[in-house]
Each structure stands twice: as structure tokens, then as C-alpha cells.
Length: 339
Length: 161
Image 1: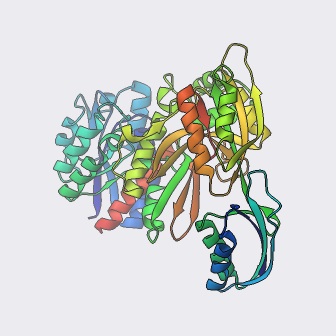
Image 2: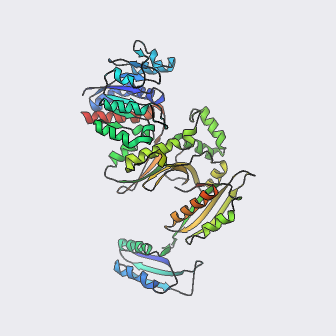
Image 3: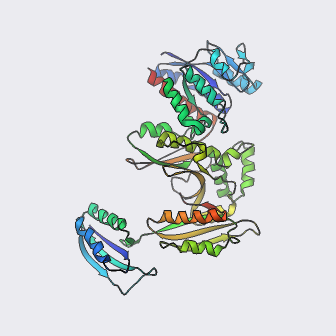
């Protein structure tokens, strides 16, 4: 294989990040794997740009940013969207970056299954289908004999899934505990440093674009719970789904609680716990200066293993290029396996 | 190497023999033993002071065996072996019978509330920080009790990681 044709489905922050990162790292990928990566299609929720000869990464991002939709891409703009894009062009790997949907996992689920049916590899940043139907999706990939990688679904740029599976391959993972949501960590960190109330900081976070207009998925722990399910399945082999996680968010945390915790040298963090007897996302007390003491939008995780004891990782849990970095890493490992 | 231990034994016949057995069996030597039955701790147990000598590995095994047998090690080399547990509760703590909440934690054989701090917010929900001292290894029992109370009284619990 000396060329890999990719389709990017979903062209929001993550999809654009992948295009940007590809334009920056094309040469590096070629050096590392001997394969040139070419974007043959990119699609947003209502349109796409498709060309068998390849699209220009920077022009894709520019078109989306300036015109709002990919159909405005010069010459190769198209009204095709959704699964139809996968039939419109020949490709090798689907880069699936559509928004997470925790109700029915669409459109990620249909796109992923379609790519598997077509015998294509898939790299995803999506959590919905993994949180709801992990076994089914993994099973379908195995049956189709294709590669399916999802590092970007947990912790953005923070290495955890491949890290635990490959780098800690000699160890059994006993538990993972960590901060898997950057927005809530940012809110709690600022409440701690400023002594302000939850509502005030939430509003400011929304203005800064750190929290979404509808912050429910983050502040009620739903996002972290999805990641809990993914880690439970992929690292601990627990056949769990979203409804198996006990979830408590941070919307009830007030400045009194933070103040009381501080007095005893504790911080309050939204902690996801993944172990054989506990799948839980809840506000917890962590010792100041411990490995859980990371602030801002950072994510962290402490992986407890049988041989290596505890290993901790820290990294930026969200962001366009940060998440794209994890997806490109997945793509590179697929390319390395092929050659 | 040597270690100094203080164990707590139930005041019933046969307890002292039980602690002596594992010492020789696991390759440690008994240097000193002080057992004063006329002195009892607050919970009615009898403390026994031991000094043991042996390889680090053997001493570790002896300590583990003591714990398996259910003896509480309250001190090891001068270090108190009680764990401190901190938890925060949020909700209608006072209205939901605060005394009952505290009694039910104190009722646990292995735990005592040693600190309590509460922030009241008028008629709104209040926030309390509770410090509990528990025998090492009993953390989960304390957490379970707190969860049980919180579930009944609809309180949010913020436990330690």
C-alpha cells in the first residue's frame, strides 16, 4: 500500500482539526509509514466535497469556515451527505468525527457499519455508538476483518486506550480512575481558585466557549460516563453499557463544599471510576498535590495494574488539533500494520 | 530488622495464643510481649504490645496474617494504624435528623466521627464535612454506611477517591 484514501465524516471542530493536522503531517506520515494520505471526501451534516483525485486540506477548512458548508468547495462541492458519501468514492479508511449522540448513536453507527460492510478501516472520535453498543460495534469490525480504532473517543490527546493496551501490554488493568471531562474540571478548578459560585463560572465558561450552550452532557457527567463505558469495555473487558454507570454531575457543587474541602487540603473533582465492582462518575475529594490535582481543562487518569502498579497520564482532553492528534496516531498505526 | 506493634485483642480466652502462632510459623522471633489485661481501650478491647525481629519479608507476612485473623493493628513502629476518612454531605442535613446520621456512623464498631464542620445557607440545603477515624481496612464499611444514610435522606455524598 503506498496511498491511503480517507473520507472525513463530520466536519466540525474535530473534522477540521483532522484536515489541518493532515496538511501539517502528510510528510511525517509518509516518512513513518511509506504511505501518502489523501482526503477523497469530507462531509458535514448536510453536504460534502468529493474528489477521487484528492481534496486540498486547507481549502476544505477555509470553505467550511467561510461558506458554512462543504458544498461550496470549488468544483467538487456536492449535496450528498450521510452514508451516500461512502458510496460516492473509492476509499480505504473512514475518519468518523460526527457529534456524539447518546440516544441512538446516529449517524456514527450507520456510517461505521456501512464502512465495515465495505471492508474499510475506521478511526473514530465518537463516543455514542461505543457507549451504547460497544460489543456490537467491535464484533462487526472483527467479523469484517477490518481495523477499528477509537483512541480519540476518550481523553482527546491524552493517551490511554492504546497506551494501556500496547505500552502496558504485560499488565492486567485492575482499575482506571481519572478526570475524563475537561469542561467540568475547568469549572471546578475556577470555583476552587476564585471561590465563586457554580452558576457564575458556568456562564463565563460558556462565554469562553469552554462549556457548550447546553452544558448538560458535561456538567451532568454524561460525557464522562460514556468514556467510563469505553474504558470498562476496552481495558477491563467488562461488558457494560451506558445505563450500567452510576452518574452524578457537578451542578450541585457549591462554593461551601469547595471551601470545606479546601480546609482539609482536599479538592473536589468529577472522577470517573472504572473497576470490576464499580462503574461510577461522581464528584470526589482528592488530596491537593496528588496525581488527581490537575487543573484547567486537563484530563488525567491513573491506571492501576497488576505488575506496574499505578501509572498516571495527563493531557488535554479536548480541542480540535489535540483530538485530531489521537486520530492521526490511530491512522498511522493502521498504516503501519498494513505495510 | 525489628518492628514494634500494638494490637487490639478481644477480651476472651485464647486470643494471646492465636497471635503467637503465626510469629514462629512465619519465621519471625518474638523479642518482647506486654499484655496487661487490666487495661482496656474505649471499645473494650485489650491492647498487646509486641516487638518482633526477622527478615523484612517474614515480618510483612506476620503483619498480613494478623490482619487476616482479624486483629486490629493500632500502631506499627509508633505510627497509628487508624485511617482518616473525609467526606462531604450536601442536602437537608439538619432537617433530616443530624443526630441520627452521626450516631449511625459512630455505631460502626470500627469507626468514630472525630470532626464535623457545617455551612448553613438559610432554608437552603446545607453542606457538611465529616472527619471519621476508622481502623485500617474498614474504609469500605464506612463508605457503605454513609451511602446507605445518604440514599435514605437524599443527600449528595462526596467521598475520597
